[in-house]
Length: 253
Image (cartoon, rainbow, N blue to C red; front, side, top):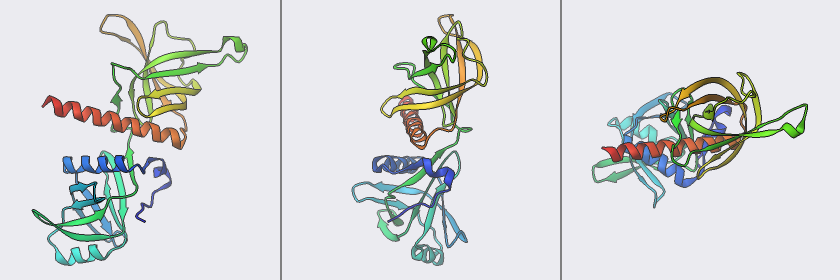
């Protein structure tokens, strides 16, 4: 079985859904993204690109170099790591490589990986959420002195990243929102992905003027120690947003 040896902090970003893996690799092929190939305990390295993803035969074809001696060592290796480190990090390991002959010449052939790591760094991407069919966020506010005063505040997401969200709330700003305040069991309903139960911490706040002239508030929240399951939901939703954004850009060309 082909597998990736992941660092502990990468475990929550492992993708195991075959359809998602196929789409991720297909995107890399379309973008002609450069991948680093590493084997022989990191002694041997080279760069390659994905030529094609053959989902029907569970195979991936990659560009091959001109150095025959290097190619021989590569084909003989039983632990080859493919990785993309710029922007969105992607990594997987293949245990069996072979040569294939395509219309344009020889290529590396590997089995479609059973899992891969996809890590979307917060500092690279903050993705705007849809204005139509906005993403709701429910924040429970607990009154420690009077349970009858407990309430749930309804907010709308403005953007999302793996590190947190920004949400819009009407004026006047609820007094519960102060810098550093934490809220447990916050529910965010991500379309086509699922609902989260998260702890959110207020990091920043600012008033904003909407297009209709009304004043609302934009609040930046940080995710506080999200569970692996919640990390996975957030990761899948940001991936969906990224693909939607790419489709819109390609449609506008």
